[in-house]
Image (cartoon, rainbow, N blue to C red):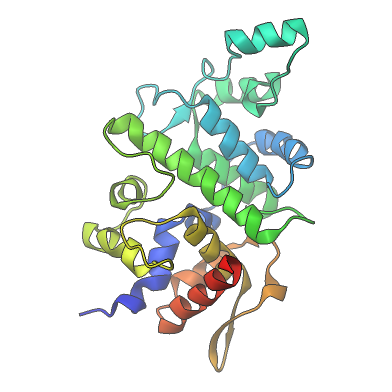
Length: 264
């Protein structure tokens, strides 16, 4: 029987899209939405363009539009009545990137804009999954990204199952909705990846910890190690695959040490 610790790296890779999506080859013909998000993120503390895009996507996501995956159609990108009234009266102006004319045109050209398009845009623009920009606090940025990604996953899943709890945590059914993994492995993921002693689900803090761990993971003749100096806010394909291939008990211990450091 496989030791539960031997599944830590594989489980982290499969459970957290911030890791698995870093290895996806982007076939995006345009990263213009990510370009707009870069500008929006420049004035927001501890948020990358990827996080901003996820947050704005979540704000506009209202239905699956008859598809089997969460997406935005051109109708979803239209400004709501209250936004229009507020802008007309000069009280407020929408800062949602999907309501810009440029983004609306891109969504219309694609017909639907999916969550995976967001991650592909980051890979194309940055060479990986960028969860923090230069000058940001890496952990707070990882946490903001984790919260935005969990919200996107939960919101989409709740549209399929109206009785599903929306609690800002990842559970078995939500992970199953996007992870191409066998049921038994998924069912054990929250226990395998557990860092806070609560094995029912996975929190944003745990998600953020594994992002930081992947970013700062080192390999040597002595085994795995972690370095804060290596952390740069970008998960590359190489770093994600390093986690995936780490069937080593020390990976879980390293994750615990990083989690405890930020929990103090």
